[in-house]
Image 1: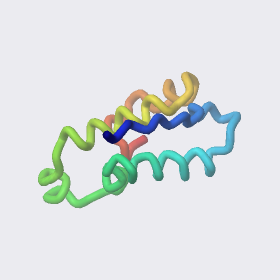
Image 2 (image 1 turned 135 degrees about the vertical axis):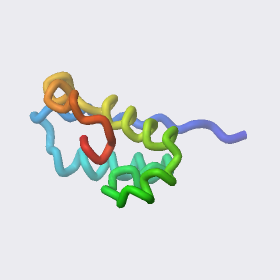
Image 3 (image 1 turned 90 degrees about the vertical axis):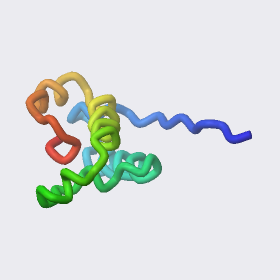
Length: 82
């Protein structure tokens, strides 16, 4: 039986180290198979991507941001934009 692994990544709030937070987030997205959603891709390739996967990556990033930082990126609609 396989059990899920819980990751405890502190939300980025500008007080913690962005470089280390970024490394942890990239690792988490890779583990979830979502790392390519951080790349800016040409339009035909974006259309070919599964929208559900892009939304999962976006939500993962939103959940890992502190309130202050989250307010600054509320207009971003993609993981790459964040």
